[in-house]
Image (cartoon, rainbow, N blue to C red; front, top):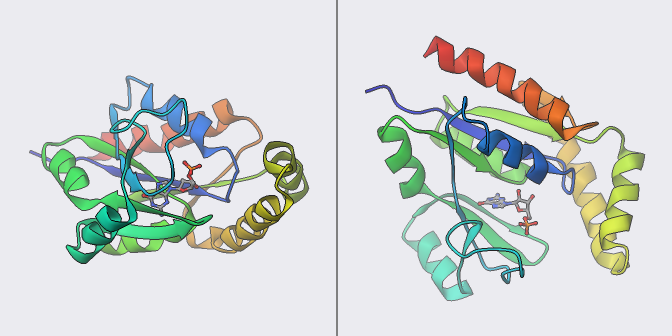
Amino acid sequence: MAKGLVVILSGASSVGKGAIRDLLLNDPDLKLFYSISETTRPQRADEVDGKDYYFVTYKEFADSVKKKELLEYTEFNGYYYGTPKQQVEFLTQKGKNVLIEVEAQGVGPIKLNIPESIAFFVMPESIEQLEKQIFELYGDDEASAQRRINKAKMDMELAPLFNNIVYNSDPVKAYEQIKAVLLKEMGAK
Ligand code: 5GP
């Protein structure tokens, strides 16, 4: 059986990857399974443990790192996030296509481990528009908003490393662009 495809969705911090991710995951033509990350971030009210994330303690996360159970991991805004290796291997061995959503630093290590993976980088329409969006969402904590803006600017420096850059002027258009590339790739397999 052919191995499933590994699709990486990344982009500048706070660019709105979530909406694109949900459109991709809900598309029956793509049959994508979501790679659920481990995180030490506290669970939000609308999140489900084991569906959105595996919410773990620092000790549990450190154990996963020590046992080399993560494909990659990073620190973001004071919390740790990592991609469990076994889940991705299990699904792709069974021929399933997997979608991994990571912030920009996570892409390099995944590409090193899985060179045949396809990475998409979501860019904002403009940095001004992204700054406005970040201040609207996180403006009540100015330091945190500023950290996100700085991180987005650093992330955008990595964009030229990606073959597939998608501008998020409209999440539906961005999703359609990604879908077209994936359908071609899946047809070629
Ligand atoms: P949030 O806390 O808003 O759910 O996620 C914060 C950031 O962490 C987002 O940019 C998200 O894509 C990223 N992220 C989620 N899971 C992982 C992961 O396993 N590895 C890495 N590198 N980033 C992740």
